[in-house]
Image 1 (cartoon, rainbow, N blue to C red):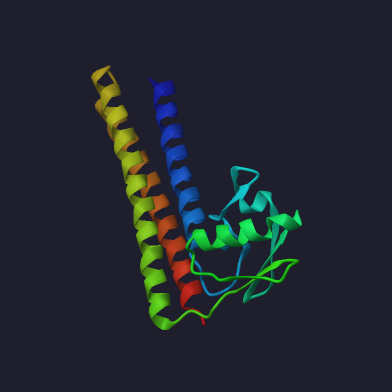
Image 2: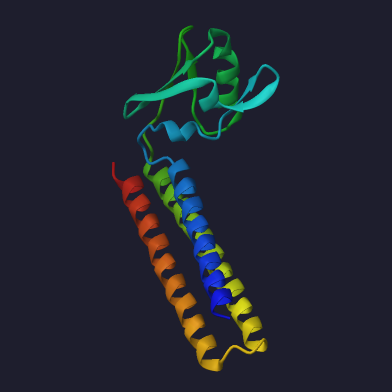
Amino acid sequence: MEEELEFIFEEVKEQMDNSMASLEKDLSRIRAGKATPSMLDSVIVEYYGANTPLQQVANVNTPDGRTITVQPWEKEMLEPIEKGILHANIGLNPQNNGEIIIISVPMLTEERRIDLVKQSKAEGENAKVSIRNARQDANSSIKKLKADGLSEDSVKDSEDQVQALTDTYTKKCDSYVALKETDIMTV
């Protein structure tokens, strides 16, 4: 029984860690006014007939807080990269100068910042739902062990441990979202 409980705790912790990693990734995609290479993570480029992530065909840099440069490894990739950026529908206009692609990141309006904060909070809420689902799965597994003969006290202690883990991860979610909100609202 102890081994099964350990397995349940490891599994729920792994699910919650995955939720947090997903939240971090989702929040990093939300633009906070500063140009970052991760803004182009969703860009897919047609590379010799195959859809390929931009990072595999070009070098993406940010020379300053308002500019992203994309240096393709092959010059003939300039147009497909430009098309890929436009098709990604991320609100950026690439400028092709024949050597590199330059993207000027516009300043965010107050209204747009508020929308991005709402989006960040929605991502945080999605992560919390995922964490609560992991808790629910763990508690179901613990209840099955009760049916197999686990004592009432052990069930209660295990459920309390899972709830403590849930509370910890929920607080982490809130702090990540609060940091992102501060980042977005800072002009």
